[in-house]
Figure 1: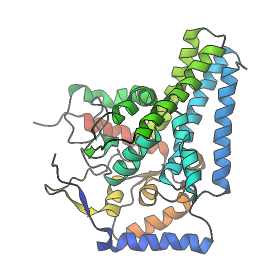
Figure 2: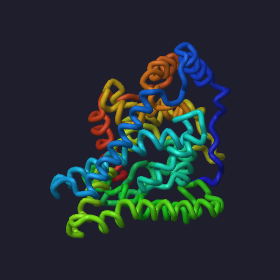
Figure 3: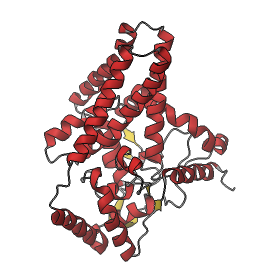
Figure 4: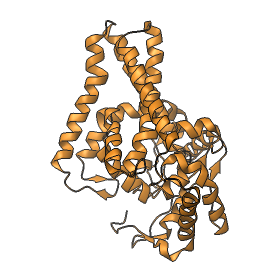
Length: 362
C-alpha cells in the first residue's frame, strides 16, 4: 500500500455535484422546510426511545414469564440497534438538528447502547465517508480477517465458506463492539491507513465512564435485581446482542458490498480517478426505496447514495430527494445503483461475499 495521501479530483472540476447541490437546496427552498428533523422524525425518535425503555423495564422488572422475557430481550436488541441507526447516526453527522447541543445530546445515546461516539465519528464520518470502498483505506470493508470484503485482502481457505458463516458472525458484531472493538480502535496508532494522533484525555475518560454505564445498565442491574438464574439472564443478554448485531450488520453491509460495486484504488501518487461525489455513485447502493417499513426503520441507510452525498441532511428527507439524485446522475452519465428490495440487496451481498471468498487464480 502506498503511503501517499489519497486525493480525489476536486468536485469543482465536475458540474455534477454543483448542479445536484443546487437542485437539492432548491427543493428545500421550494417546500420551505428544514433540512433537519421534522415532526415525523421527532415522532420516530419518541417511538424508538419509548420502545427501548419499555422493553428494558419489562425485562428487569420481570413483568413476563421467562420465555416471553427472552423474546422481549430480542426486541430490546432491535430497539437499541434502531437508536444507533435512526437517532444517534444522524446526530453524530450533525444532521438531526441545526442546534449542535441537541446533536451532541442525542449523539450520546450511541454510548448508552454500548458504542463509542468519538471513535465512530473518526471511523465512520471521516474514514468511511471519505474513502468509501477504497481497499486498505475504508475500515468498513477491512473487517476481521475471517471476512474477505475487498479484492486486495489476502485469500484464506476458510473464505470459501464466508457466504454461509456470515449469518453466524454478523449477529456477534455488537458483542465484539461493546467488549473488544472500541478498545482496540482507541489504543491503536492506525485505523486502516488513517494515522491516529494522540486522543484527548477526556475521550479516554468518556470511553471508560460510558462503558461502565452500559455494563451497569445491561449486566450489573439485571444480575442484581432479577430473580432468574444467572445463566438465564446471561442468555437474555446474548439474545439481545444477537438481534442487535444482526440488525446493524445486515443493514450497514448491504449498501457497499454487493454485486457490481467498485473498489477504486489510488495511483502510486495517491490520486483517485474521479471526484469524491462521483466516487460515491460507483461504490454505493440504494435498496428498498419504495418500502415504507424499510424507510421507517432503517434510518435512511437504504438511501445510502443520498446519505453519502448529503450526510448533513436528516435521513427523514432522503426519500424525497432521491429522485433528484437519480435524475441528475443519469443526466451526467453516472450510475445510480439500486436494488428494489431489502431481500434483493441481501441476496446480492451474499453472492458478492461468495465471489470474494472464491480462491484467486494463481
